[in-house]
Figure: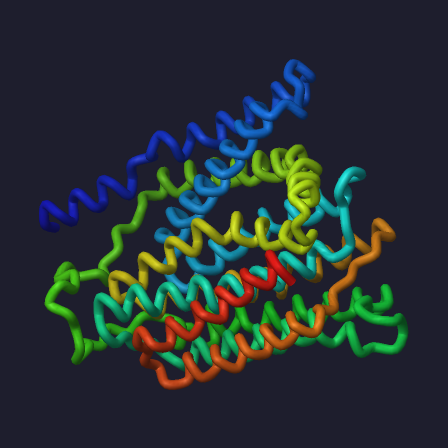
Amino acid sequence: MTASENSEHSNINRIIPWTWAAPLAACLLIVVELSGAVDTSSAIILLVSAIFLGGAIFSAVHHAEVIAAKVGEPFGSIILALSVTVIEVALIISIMLSPHGGHDTLARDAVFATIMIVLNGIVGLSLVVGGVRHLEQSFQNQGTAAALSVLGTLAVIALILPNYTLAIAGPFYAPIQLVLIGMFSITLYGIFLFVQTIRHRDYFLTVEVPTTKTLETADPTPHLIHPVPSGRTTLISLALLITTLFAVVILAELLAPTLTQTVLAADLPISLVGVIIAALVLMPEGIAAVRAARFNRLQTSLTLALGSAMATIGLTIPLVAFAAVLLDQPLALGLHSEEMVLLLLSLFIGTITLATGRTTILQGAVHLVIFAIFMLLAIMP
């Protein structure tokens, strides 16, 4: 083992101070707030809570990445996606149950925003960053095609079909429809995980194929060799991941009313709350996906991005739906007409982009334009 490899293995086994300090600080803040020692409506306390929440989210994804490095791909991407889903479900249910700002369209807005951010924002930026540095990048289109087919099916069933059912006038499903749709979604997502991890695992693994087009500035360092953390480091990260997710859930519940009231006070659409939630929970994973594309690991980048979107719609919608039925809360899922157009456009362009197994900066630019239009309509419908 070379000196550089020894250094990499040493770094992967080092518990970075902020990754344990962030969840510890978040837990201490929760204890202080719940004890009534501070005014939770104070602007300073709210700002500190928001900062600690962001730190806890980044910490959770970091520890999920450490565990992912231990278990290998594609299990690593699945762990990251599930961690993000837990955070998103906690945020959505917290705001839905808030007496000050709950609303029945939040799950729809957050899931739609997640799909748009992933398919256009993260994928688009990854393709642009990778294309700028490597001109052309390749990946296995069998895996991405399978992921996109599942994502498209779940998206249409969850976000478009409710507008056209007759049991209850749209954009709602009847309770029994909601439960069954949730079960079907979890089942389809489970079958995809079986294919991804067991049946056809090789479809989702990076294949080392030398690219024929590379800029001279491309990183010559081998990028397919990843250090594996020790068992001790993995167990510590697992414990810190559980602690961090707990802190995120509680802090989200404490901040939920303020987030909604702030958006309404600024005279912005209430759907922007869903966009903020999606952007917050996807930020760390989005950074990881763009970084992977930069180092010519586009397969990993796409697996991370599409995995997040699928976990969101395949798990978040069913879990929130079950909670809504149990708590007798209304849950609007059907999108507005302009949102349906953007969703179908994103799925169509995504299918074209991921059909050939090769991408350039042009495909990335197309996705980023669609993302810019999505953000414009989110702020100014």
